[in-house]
Length: 166
Length: 193
Image (cartoon, rainbow over all chains, first blue to last red; front, side, top):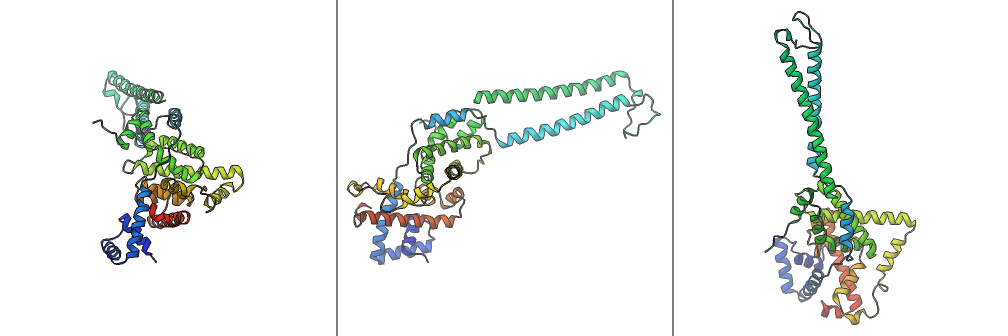
C-alpha cells in the first residue's frame, strides 16, 4: 500500500499522473499534517539537490590520461567490421577469379577442336593474337599488385594513427 | 562566447585521433564517477582506483559506444560494474567478510556520527554522513537521481534494475535518511530542513 509520504515524494518528483496530482493537492489543502510533511520533504529534497559531489585527488586526471595514452587508439565498431568483411570478400573474389583466369589461359588448348572438361567456357585464343593474351595477364597482375599496395598503405596508415594517438 | 563541445562531439574527436579531448570528458564526469564509486567502495583511494579503471575501460570501449544513448548513463554503468568487480576481487583477496563488517560498522546508528555533530549543525555534512550509512545501492540511487539528474529508467539501466524497483529503493532511501536525521537531531530536524 502506498503511504502518504510516498505519494508526497512522487508529487515532489513530478512522477504522478494528472489525476493523482490533483488528489495530492487536495490532500495538502485539507490536511494540515500532510501539508507539514510536504514542507519537510520539500526541504529535504532541496538539501539533497544541494549536496556537494566528492572530488578526486589533484593527480587523478593526469593518472587517467597517462594510462589512456598507453592504450591503442579506439576505433569505431563500424570501421572495424567494414575493413575486415569488405576487404576479405574482395580479396577472396579477386584471388579466385585471377587464379581461375590464369589457369584457364595457361591450360587452354591451342586449337578450337580440343576441349577441357574443367571449364565450361572454352578459351579460344587461336582466333586472337598473342598480344591479347599478354594484355589479360598484365591487367590481372596489375590489379593484384594494386590491391596488395592498397592493403600495405592501409596498414601503414593504421600504424601511424596508433603511434600518433599514443 | 566559446563553443562548449558536447560529449558526442568530444567522442567523435577522440575516435578521430584527437586523444587529448578525452581529458575534457574525464574532467567533466570525474566528480560524479568518483562520488558514485565512493558509494560502493567507501575508501577514497579505492574509489579513485575504481574511477580511474572506469575511465580507462570507457576509453578502450569508446568505439562500441552507441551514439543514441547518453554517454553519462553508459559511463555510470561502467562505474557500477567496475565497483562490483573491485569488491568481488577484494573479497577474494582477503578471504574474509571484512567488507561486510565494515558496512555493518558504518550502518551502526550509534557509531557513525561524531559527538559534536549536532553542535556543528551542518546539514550538508550531516546529510552526506547519513547517506554513507545507507545501503550502497540506495546511496548510489540518491546520487544518480539528485546529482546526475537521471530518470528512474536511466538509473534502472545503469544499475540493472527495473524502474519500479528504483522508485521503491529511492523512497526507502529518503525515508531512512529522514528517520536518521530525526534520530540524530530530534526536533531540530524541522528547523534545519
